[in-house]
Length: 339
Image (cartoon, rainbow, N blue to C red):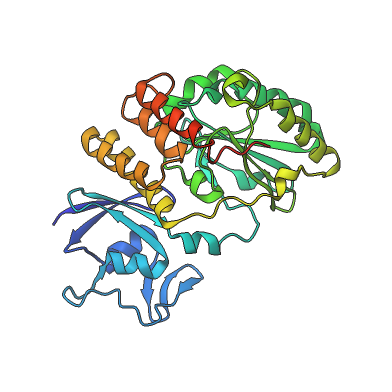
């Protein structure tokens, strides 16, 4: 029986024996935690009623139709028939339904695989800083360290996330900066999905009550690339100091992120599949899924620029990147809101 690698919404990978698009109910429950019960699909104390939906395959007793199961849970199943890997991502409606103003839970590994939780910093003013080795912001960890040292006694806590495909891509920059704040690596880009991040370096502010008080905006850690970004890092740093000292928020704090679309969500799934295929050596098929992701979300840098690096291209001065940059710049730099 063929084996399918199913990449869950949290980036975890499950190996499932599939037959005609179906999986044994017990095997799927053991992998994902979602168990079929009379009241619906349940995981722990959470149950999703089926409301007339049928997830058991009529042609395969005891087996669940994977696509019907995903639809019932409000997630999108991204899968190409010719590949033995698929990805689950929340639908746009499901993503929107979870937006209650609170910071989504986030636990990710550091470069050595040790899990570190953003949630552990609850009770402090927190700044989620995202960057990547494929971005010039890889040089800015020291700038963030200076800010953390300055504001630590006032209660601020930084939490840094590298949106990289391989922890080893981020390791040299982390080791060179030796930051005192936590730095984790998000190979599945779940941070981008949970916090509506489409470019780096992006920051999110979270208050002591775990409320997001400023949604993602671009904020460099220093002015090394000011000519390119056209952003003065001091504007963000000064606003951050004011928030820490008095609770005052900048005008940009009132901006809501652009609503996610199903196409944008599917793009994240396609990128996860591409990353999996490239890691196992199938770069050609990886490029196919990257192309699909880029068509679905043409201005999402976590898809476009990271994809260039993923397939061995030059994400800084290569022809593919420069062509993308010129296209994006001419379009008015969509998704590049500064603090």
